[in-house]
Length: 296
Image (cartoon, rainbow, N blue to C red):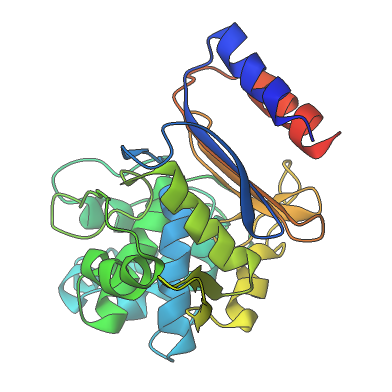
């Protein structure tokens, strides 16, 4: 591993990378830039954070991934749907939405009532799973989760995920009608993104050290859920997708729009997190990371 060469590539090329962390066998071995001071946009990594929230509820029997999404939507909204749309959505489970395998949903919700807009979308071949990247899928999962647990998803995340992981700096947004927007809009520090990555790296257990240096372990997600979330549930051209988590080489990754990344390679014992604002389709940052950090 040549972290200095990776750092040099970032600086020499003027890539707008806020900060980077590299863990080897759960130990922070390299860091660069702003990793702890400021929070930065996660964009679609928000979906992976939502996956953790769903996992907590799933482990407690509060949500059934194979139930129809309409069973977790307020009755007043379901009653306003057309019979055709209702019949289509009755074929869609929470699991289907978490694997982004519902054709016909636009990229994002619109208007002043995102839930009404989403439920009015015309689905294509609703009975057949097919990968379709849509923020509406994650938004609907967030709505379903709130109705399943009977409380605000943002507050649930704060109490059940952020607090145990020691995450104190964060921002997130809600839809116009007040639901946690699970598709995007969250901000964290690089270091706190790494904590969520480490939670999945350890199969749902978060390891930390107290003031005396003693290691403590706390299970937050079941190993069962982590295995499901990080394994291929739906194939796509990128190599596969789990529950709002991407397949990456021998492991998996959390991915954001403008090169926000957390790569978790459990077999190799490596975790790499970085938050950036590089608004193009280039792969230079990834290629540099793979070359200098992963040795590919």
